[in-house]
Length: 290
Image 1: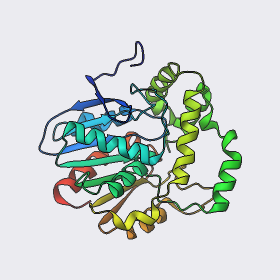
Image 2: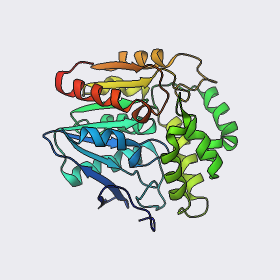
Image 3: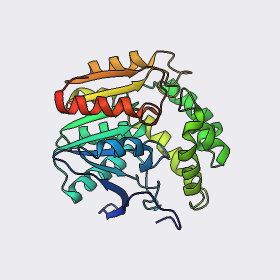
Image 4: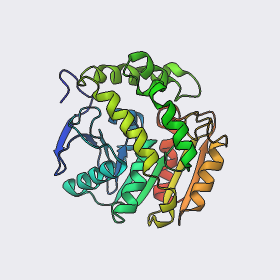
C-alpha cells in the first residue's frame, strides 16, 4: 500500500496466485455487479463519478491494476494477457456473478482480451473509449516504436502526466485537476524508473497483442461508448479517421454490439460526461437499448 495515501472509500486487498495484490473499491448493492477497469497509468478513482451514482442500483467494484494506484508494485510483464489473467483470477477469487465489466481505454483492450480468453468471465461488456479497435500494421508499429522514447506520456515528470490527462478532455481541461493531483501523489511513491518502465511496457504490449481479429469470438453483448472528440483514439497521426467510424467498424466485427457516441466529449468520457454515461449504462443494462 502506498504510504499515507487513502481513497475516499473503504479499500480492500485481494492477493492472487500470479503474485498480484489487488487494491479495490466495493460500493453499493444489487443483483447485478459492475466491475470497472481503468486505463493506462490511471487508478480506480477515475470511476468515482460513476460509482457515486450507479451504487444506488448495482454493486460497483473498481480495481487498481497491478503496478497502479494502491495495488502492488511488483515486477510484472504488463502484457494484455497478464492483465486479463489478473482480471479473471480476481473475479474468481471474489466469486462475482451477474457481472458486467466496464473497461476504459487500455482497460477496454484488457476487457476484450479477457473475454476472448475466458468466455464465461462476464455477462456483458461495456467498452469506454477502448484501445484495441485500431489495426496497426508493421510499418505503424515501426513508426510508433521509433518515437516511443520521445512520448510525453512515458516521462515520469509531473508536467508530462498533467499534459496527458488534460489532453484527455475536450472542454475545460481543468476539470481533471483532482485526478492529476492524486496520480502525481501516487507516482511519487514508485520505485525509481518503475513508472516509466510500466507505462512503456503497457504501450508496447497493447500493440503486440492486438484483439481486432478476435472480436468475432466475443460471446457477450457489447456496448461501445466513445467521445466524439476523442484526441487519443484513434491515433490521429497514423489513422486519420473519425472516432465514430472506428467504433462502428469494430462493432460490425462483433456478434452483438451497439455504439453510442457522446458529443462535445473527449477521451475521459466517464468524467467529462459522467451523467450521460451513467444513464446510458442503466438503460442498456435494464432495457437493452441506448
